[in-house]
Length: 133
View 1 (cartoon, rainbow, N blue to C red):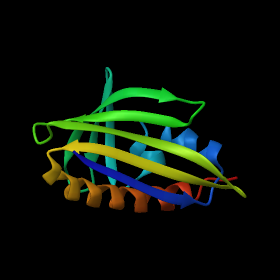
View 2: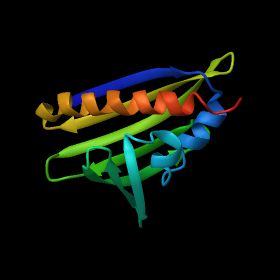
View 3: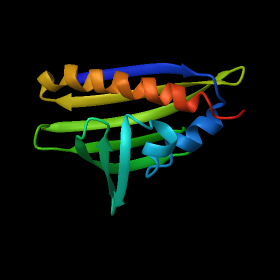
View 4: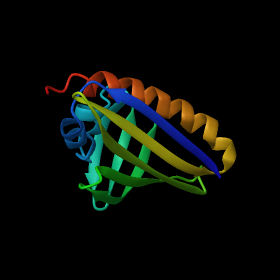
């Protein structure tokens, strides 16, 4: 199984970043606009439209507000398994760390998803870095 772990530092407080990350239906407005262009919330999931036109069904697995962690899974014929999470950690001095972890099968999809995660984090870092302190 390919395990992908990405992390960025954001120049915004953890509580503010977490508020945006935890807003499951607002990825296209509050988390990664441009990378994600639309989200339709459906029971237990969201349909995410990406900037390149790709659509993915992301199943909501759970949220832990105390740990600032949100978990989801992608339901796709291309993936035998996918589970992912975002976690926001207070980095001090008004900054936070955003950690995005994904486990995926088949392994061959790892490189593709890693590239997509990198692109998503570029958008997220720029957007979340504008969150007022």
